[in-house]
Length: 188
Image 1: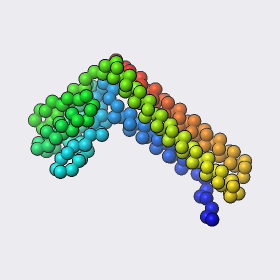
Image 2 (image 1 turned 90 degrees about the horizontal axis):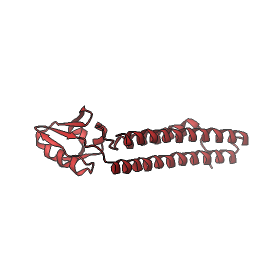
Image 3 (image 1 turned 45 degrees about the vertical axis):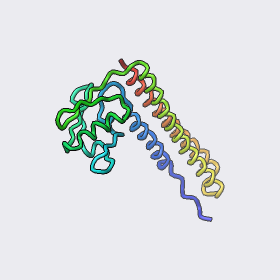
Image 4 (image 1 turned 180 degrees about the vertical axis):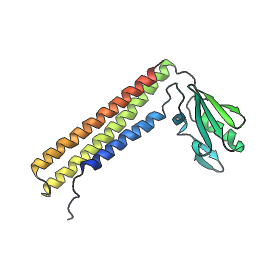
């Protein structure tokens, strides 16, 4: 039987950091009433016989706080870009202006804000679960190392405490990110 690899807390911390990065990416796609280029990140355009990310067929900018501008590089696919944005269920209605699309960002209703806050909460909970799963993996690794006599009981306890502290720190960061996002969503 091969020995387990040595325990490296940094590896587990990097995985936990990945959960926070994923959360920030998911939060970027939530509409808050302010224009943000990341709002259009999930949109795929049916262009040239294949689905392409919007950013590979156009440039996205925010000329004013409640307006997104999409400059399509090929005039022939402007209708496809318009269709993709409308089909994305973001509540956006682009206005075609030659080779560009102007997308006014409508104000959010109170009901929609509450819905978005719930969605943000679900995203945060998914990442909390991911962090706790990483903690479980680390704890199992430590148990295995102690069983193989690769580390002492004291080392096991010390590493357990370090893993728990890293978990608590990352959960706190997730909660903080959620609080900021909810404030941003609920701002009128």
